[in-house]
Length: 451
Image 1 (cartoon, rainbow, N blue to C red):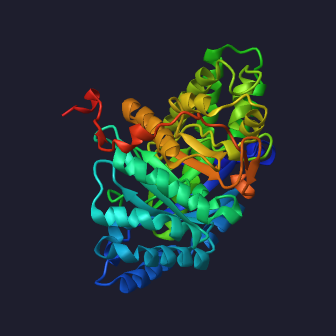
Image 2: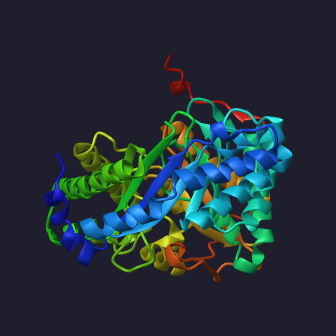
């Protein structure tokens, strides 16, 4: 039974420790929108999204006032658009524009689901859809895109990996006037989940019901403050404290999620308890790790600290709700975390270390800027490395990388708001092109054969 008491104990967290509901995301199935032509389908897509989510901004603002918890983002995710566009893949951009126009009409910040699932193979219509991504992202403001190129069950589709390296390069080039901003709205996944409320990787899975509310709760500052209060604790006590803190945060998130679903006429999906940082000091995953005893994030011991943090967060969330889902853990987006930004700027954090950290946290190489002359093959190889971690470890991994046009190591890109700024980080100069050109499928690991 949930009541106002569950929220009142979090007021201090809100006022002093940056606790917030990071996003209320409505997932909407667009499968009933498929019509005989792209134009008819686009109109129905626009009408459906606008009708289903017409009150999402109003309701979330009401809930924020009533419960005293900031709700930062109001978002929508939809059925992977490659499925909707299958009969007319050459006109996929019409669906993309319709989705972006709906997002503007609703007043939400992002709409996710201009997505394709090609982890085992890529049909002709899916390839044509993926080829449309750079232009569509350049020509829209709030639309986000994702492509799932691998899974623990199917392996890694290296033809799709190669193509996505090329698409990321093209997206950066045609949004060069904005520091390659289009790439900040494009994620490449392995083991993508169907109920992720966070952007840019959210989409509404075909296994979900028609309309669902998924909520993402975030509280890096709350966890950091809890650790500050026990400076002499051993690691067992530290883990227990993080778990208890995550429990409280999740309880508040579930209360908001269930009430939002009720008022919006949707099903309650999941609470995603992810420590999603911002560029604000005191709201940083990196600073949590440093509070645990590291002089600077990126030094030896970082991966161990992150593993413990991620596990404790998940345990606390599962204790608090039977509907914990999405990604739920700790995010390490470089541009969105002030501690990560500063560590990267002083050279204490490199891509190789970040890759190691992704083996034990929630997602992957996120919001990383690299030199503009980085080749498509190198980007594809980075994607392949990250996908391999996800495939072997049966976890979600992702790459959101920005080859910053006309920028070199030491420069930076700035996107503002929650997306923050990113120092341009070095990549290895040795070529991976021959490996990427091989194509084909990296087979699934032996432990995937569980039937």
